[in-house]
Length: 229
Image (tube, rainbow, N blue to C red; front, top):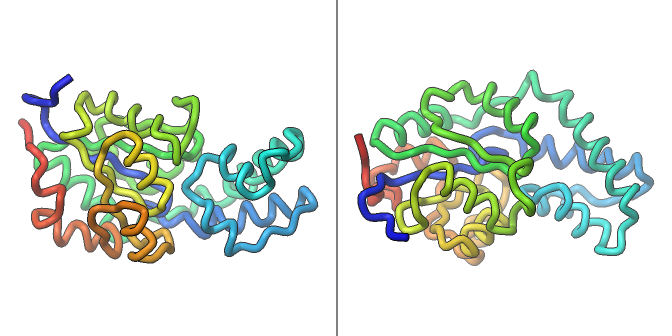
């Protein structure tokens, strides 16, 4: 299916890309795993943030993990992380970036590996739903990042094709998911990974965070997206 005639779409990861949650997740997973009797260094946990919880636990606990232990850890993480929901803070420039993209006629879709209720908490923190056309979460797909399902779901919600979309994310898992879906990915450093890591994973461009991307919006890959009415 050709994307000719459709307007461009900007697909956004949310955790660590638009909302400052990466290290909150790291601490919540660290404590959840301790409650399960597992001592996993935060440095290792941090590098898995951005995956869906199923894939995160598979990486941290091994493919032969006890399903009951994994389920208990996931539930504990959810409870621990939920304690922060009322205090979540958007990253500098995040809401303005979403509105600038919408103002240029691009369809804005959020695509998060978070659960649906976690995504809703982040949307409340962003307070920019006026610029968002649609959102998709791990609740909507069979496999979360780095699988391409979320990116493909976001494309469907945007009503466009990979050649007319750009994804913005903060992790190598975002980049991997985009690569598998055929969508170029812009990286941001607000999730704590390095520029080199994101570029080596395949990010087309890398910015400090939402405010930096906003300042260079027209000069970035996004600036070449087709607009719309």
